Image: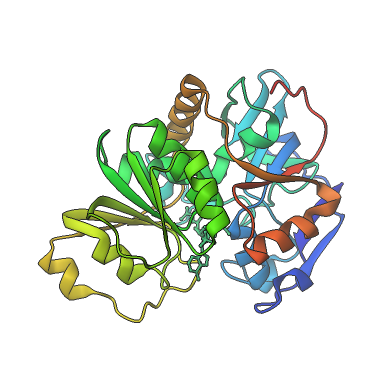
Length: 330
Ligand SMILES: NC(=O)c1ccc[n+]([C@@H]2O[C@H](COP(=O)([O-])OP(=O)(O)OC[C@H]3O[C@@H](n4cnc5c(N)ncnc54)[C@H](OP(=O)(O)O)[C@@H]3O)[C@@H](O)[C@H]2O)c1
């Protein structure tokens, strides 16, 4: 089958280690199901994998991709939940299993014609979305949902700051936050992305690092070192910063420990979400008629071009991969 996979690691030039070529179809296994992939999508995670973050050489070749809409023989198109538990008999929140992984970490990923998924590791996809839009729910939107509603625990009427405007997680935070009645402020290095953010539902947008007109109740961080001090300064006393990533690096110039204790801030990490959260996300998206912002759609054969666009950092929203033509209901 055709697949996009990591053949070798290149920390500085990640695309050099990408191959789009033939890989064996997954073998059926007890407790798992082989499903045909209809659409997939890219996440920054795929670039980290090509750089060698979270994988070892012994695991290569590894098919990339966490997001998928796949065709289930009885249920029709489903959104795949890419969090896989690793501890035998683990019960409860799978994101807290110390041995959990995402598809494309220990098990082959979704950027392929077929994917092996644990039995039940999916939810029905929202009817009003096409398959590429729905695939964005697997990772970026699930992560954003948990950050806002499980971790930050913000309420309608409160104000949140999203650092970065164009990324998959950032656009999901803007769209979900606005739909939930939050005042969403965003920062971006690019004027174009700042105006796109306003179209997506942000109430106001600022240059990266710009002083804000007021303190916010929560900051949603995925940028890391480049915005950390600004995030801490932006919070009201008792506010919460939820961090899910560190695209610009994980060693900020200042940890801001004094401000954190003096202002009694809460620093909360967040990773992906549960299948129940994915189900609740799909119901919310359906009820509100939300459509994940899609930047561009590529074929599986053109995954390299899509990854190049992600690396350049120009995209606003999801970089979608149409794997096969499904029963698109969009
Ligand atoms: N923990 C989890 O479960 C989880 C899940 C998903 C993603 N993540 C992580 O979250 C991060 C974002 O993921 P993504 O897929 O949304 O990535 P992405 O689509 O590549 O987004 C990158 C974003 O980062 C901002 N950015 C990058 N470098 C920056 C810099 N030097 N200064 C300021 N802003 C910068 C960009 O903002 P502007 O260009 O608008 O300034 C853009 O919005 C990644 O590190 C990823 O690994 C974690």
